[in-house]
Image 1 (tube, helix red, strand yellow):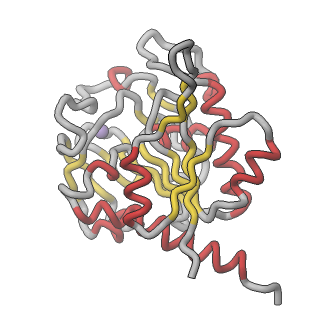
Image 2 (image 1 turned 180 degrees about the vertical axis):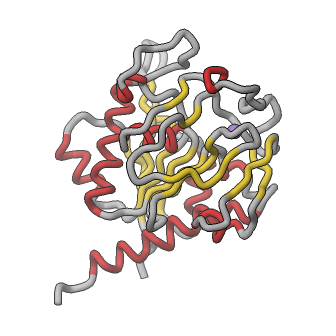
Amino acid sequence: MKLPVIGIPCTARPGSEAQTGQLQLSKAYADAVLMARGIPLLLPPTDDPLLRQSALSHCDGLLLPGGGDPDPRFYSEPPHPLLGEVDFAQDRFEMALFALAQIRGLPVLGICRGMQLVNVALGGSLYQDISLAGAAPLLHRQNAPRSATIHKVEISPDSELYRLLGSSAVYTNSMHHQAVRRAGEGLRVVARAPDGIAEAMENADGSLLLVQWHPEALLQAIPPMQRIFTELTRRAAITAQKREAPPL
Ligand code: MN
């Protein structure tokens, strides 16, 4: 039996005279997929549509990880002074992977930046900084270690996320300074922090699951967080089976 392959884009860091360029991805994402019995396939950025398409044809699911801010030009806003680091080419690459995953019907898990990027790809918008969201926001950029939880998240009982976590409220870590403003097409906010900030979104059939926190850093502290990854590999395994089934 073949285990499902989960594509994960990584980031390219340019080299210097002393060191060659590096591809980067936090090891925790790959570990979480391995623990969920999936094979992480790291996808280095490329502008070539054929290479992107071919790379994604090896994947049964897609995980979009954390990282920098999506470039606000993708939601037709000029950069606010509080905008963080952006990488237009990286955004374009990851959005292209997402579009291909949608065409192929692959399950997608978006984490932190991944949630924001998918929201923007589907026509939604972001607060370029949470301070712009209005009424007294909570601390969403914790100083505590990534494995520590900082704020509560309330989960809609009629959501896939509720079914997965088996709880209507969890404490999560929080390492973001941006947040979803307008929801993208087909996405519903299914979890919020007590200040109203969107903390999770999903689509109608649950094939898109987006979380603003970092479940990959909470697997020890909150074991049910592993189900977010096992659900991705479970759905990916079904996709893989359909693909390999002979045509009727
Ligand atoms: Mn938060």
